[in-house]
Image (tube, rainbow, N blue to C red; front, side, top):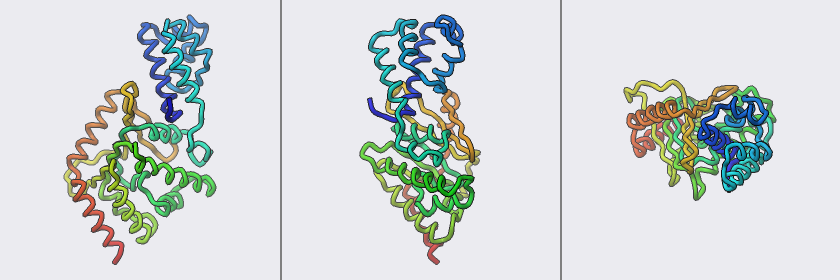
Length: 282
């Protein structure tokens, strides 16, 4: 089984929780039976604790899981310990964002709304650099590593197995001048190119859409295996929020669908981008 170690860790947590819930026991009860703390069981089920092969053996015996399930869980645990390509950049990618990149690499669908800046998967090196110069709390070396990771992440949109990616940008994200007119012209031209990739769809939410604004940007990631539920991601300056509960995902999906209905068609969106490019060439 190949894939992102982050996604494997998440799947392992999901499977362990399913086994416990099927057994009808609480974390405290499982912990007591195995001479562990209930918090250790909870940490393993939420992805916050390292799961050792001996832990899997003990849990599978307790839950009377099949040999096939035991080997499956061990395989997930082994892959969860490996490092993703983005993690070699060290402190240039903070831990809270490491998690997102790992999930993003495994996603089969990506729905993203951006209200202030161009999506990271569509940013040019010059645009990314200006964002870091203008507001980054990182050292120059870490900023350089972070920029490199962001550019490398963009390769996923051009892969043969690229995720079904749907981006909605507010018009403000297109008109916010990051850097100078030259940087913006290059960025918007690159945006046109990225929007024409086979698995990518881009729409612009114009100022006059009449739509009630959504408070903040967000991303909904979907995965190829139905056992891996969708997840909503919202980031900040120093941390991020991951929402997995069904009602959260449902509400953000409804919000995205409403934005999609109010936004310009993909064709009209590209025309608006072309018109804004002209404004940067005067």
